[in-house]
Image (cartoon, rainbow, N blue to C red; front, side, top):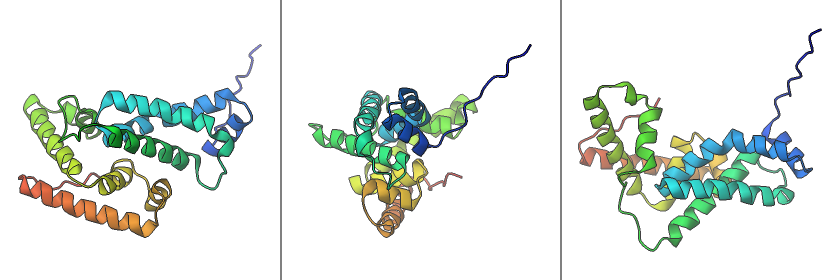
Length: 202
């Protein structure tokens, strides 16, 4: 006699958060697993430090869990979570005693960019060249103001829509569009000054 295996239906973020508010710890655990990598990537791009990004990722979910009772449902749970992670990252940056001049040797963004663009399959010479381009690109992003850099990361690197980024940043959608346009223009100018043409990611 075969026993049918029951498969749990796929639950939306909102359903998971609602269940977690009712005391379902597994629902919140599923919400964490669903978004953990993206929140870490966001924090890594904002903070430029792997250890700090790990700390912010963990703290973001702790804060979200503690604030479940105050989630009013007017925004999507993931934009609410992104807002928490973004604010924690920016607070961490502002609390630093010194401003970081550019990407470090172990900057998590460098290897992340190489993996995402699949250049690790290339020859060693190609990999070295691509790593150099990635470092220049990161320096260009770092040269932007905090506001432009944060908006660009949310929209261009993490794929949020202008509307979603506006919710995270607490500003009008038109402001997000202007910031992205301005950031792209400044980044293109930076890359050209350093002998590289901007390559759009497709």
